Length: 408
Ligand code: NIG
Ligand code: FE
Image (cartoon, helix red, strand yellow):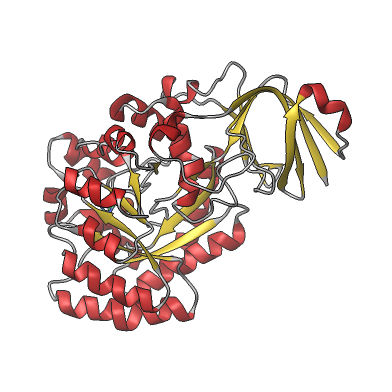
């Protein structure tokens, strides 16, 4: 089945090839082609060109886009989409000035989410996750990573990962799964819990094929650098590549250790030293910033401008979760990146589409309008241009989302 989309006013992020991450000054280059057509076949991109040549193209169906902007769907490489309940009571505490760590110490935080999730059935978790993921796609995300981490027992962590596996079956977009058993300690016996991760959870995660990646929250009051290394080394035996939470509130050596353990990405980085930027420059590990979390917790933003100016690649993700980033809007992430991190709109779009695909090893499948990639794209409302996404922050600019060439 060939579908031809004609009269595309602006075709954004069309690239003949997509082999490498964009880094440094390359990030400000965003291809925008005017008055174009796009052809899809079997759910994939089959070609694109200028409307001058549209007569030469044959298709089973033609969709006239009437001058609208078309761009690839966003790739959200860091989410905690499977959770049992909102934590809006903590939101009010935050408004009153109580900080993230104090809320956690008062019985809130990750342990609050874990208690609720342990009591929720797999089917109920799946139902709420389905509702969220549907909305995520409607808001323009066409590939996603989802973490466990609100279980904190073998049974509950496996339950989350099975929900993620069911989402992958149920939904038409690529879903990557990350095992985050080491999100917090469920009790004071840290050694006992780490042993459960290594000797109970990891073997089961592996034997059921439930995860693509392994994550650890390396932070004061959570997992030390040494504890993270033990867990990542154990994960390596089960072929799980690290994608880790580091440097959110404190720098405790997590970046260096993550690089040594071959991490695909290091995520958060709100606190970042010059030395750590140098370490990243000498590595293949990708920095991922989560501006929704900085905005919601009222903490520093990751120095994204500085990372780009140091010649590094940058990825932006939502961190969608009930505690520190309760929004999955990648449009909002674009706005925060531009307004608060001083990224150019082109850099923000590259960091949420093209580069973001590499943060979940899907650079060959999504992130740009490139022949052979999945036909996952957004058609914008009239009058939208690439700048509108961040400029009209919080305003819905999406007319429709196409997944595998079909309107979602
Ligand atoms: O990425 N920092 C650790 N984990 C999540 C938040 C978890 C929570 O507060 O529920 C994050 O921000
Ligand atoms: Fe997170």
